[in-house]
Image (cartoon, rainbow over all chains, first blue to last red; front, side):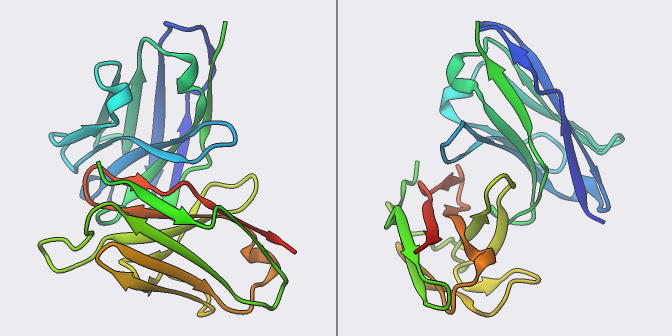
Length: 118
Length: 111
């Protein structure tokens, strides 16, 4: 079964840091782009960051550039999202997704909740 | 960045009736490889989104044929014929040309 499992979400104070992880199984992880998508409470979907198969091509949402870092370890079938200088507006469920081709996202993980609040 | 605009933002539908959602992009989604990277997702309450339609009109694995997508360039439509209970939720269009962006979402609810 193709599966993605996120972890690392938590309550953190503004200005704090958090690292999310997503472990993939059921497919050849190193053959795919991977993306983090977030959804603020009651809001729509945003692509936060993505990276290509070997991790050398990376894109970020403008509002997280310089604060978030996406990376991957193909030996561990894992993609990460290091989040620094967190703000209240970063509060969201963060989903890990496999990009099958130009935004054809499947599967989606169940998501991990990040809450930034004092 | 490409802006995706969906209409309507909400829709009340009687089960068994049809529904249609429009999605317009601020730029053409026709890629240099000849494909158009416009996709549709459904998010049911409390669940992550899942893929329904990719590249304008191709139904993803397991998606019933009551779902159909059409359009080209900047104008796209998702049609649902004979809406069933499992079809209620929020529908998002998404363009896959970098950077990828979603529409605002259209909530389809029971009338």
